[in-house]
Image 1: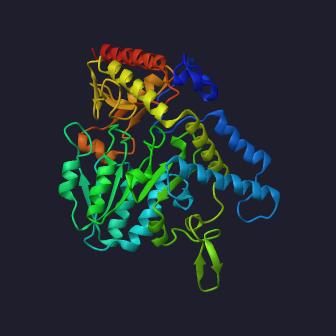
Image 2: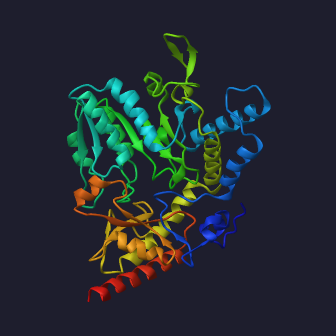
Image 3: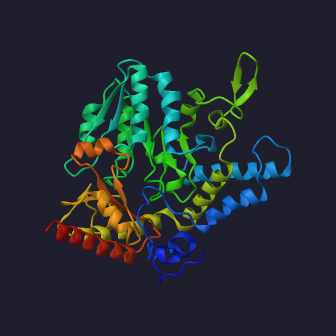
Length: 420
């Protein structure tokens, strides 16, 4: 990619995303549902196609040329992910289908083996269902107790309450880095420091942070971190678990089958070294290779530049939304530069259901999300049936925000006239 200083970041990259050139309902697509899934650049799509067209073969098991090439690309992608989040070793990166599977891996492998009746698991009320339901399963089976961090008045992670909640009984803290509904950024480094002081392990759900800001797992200090490829320009069906080497080594396999074994006998088996111990069966080879391509693409731009540009968009989005009196936005306000929260806005409009807003905006070619965003407990905590959510990525523009705001105002006017 060749960048020129006179263009915004979105101007420089939009041509790489063919889906953004289409029309929806006769209108140019304005895609503002990036927190649910990101669009994919040609660089990633071509990497996936090249695998299937040129060297489709199973990995690790073959001595022939295609298998060797596939294995090199598959394992090379692991190296890219490790470098991207500054893991200490490539063995600390485990491929999974998505972040949900990564959390379940930790829940069933570590949780079932280490938690006892009366042990405590701390999560927050704003967790995605994927970082709540697995721990409910574990608590039910082990007798562990779930405890919940609530929100500050600014609708952020309540660090002071967390410090009061944690105790010697706490064995695990599992929290979201960036809320997919509130957009708040949890103070993960301090959470980890406090948890480790009590001997607790920490898992970070980084689905909404890895695609949007620089992440350094060694600086954060967490024991595990999870992310989904489809939110970071890669295909669906691929994600990863980062785990500290010594922690992963202490955990039993999650699933049994091919690839995760060293030796198999009729009555017992021994297991492969990391990371393969946790990767049973034929993996999502093409998708993992494409994940590596997505990391290459993001790295070529620079996560610091992506974060800075998205902050500018966030400031503009909030500036425009706050001019609409019927709108209530949830989560903390960004500062003047758009910093201090993620590039998304979940909101309600007085007298209009979020699903109705989303449906009518779709008629204008504008894709936003409506519902509970897999944070049903959070919506219940806030007393809301649903919210609408506009979420941004670095390929979005101010002009798209203008189109969204204009259509949103017209939609609200329509409902106001209809109700009158």
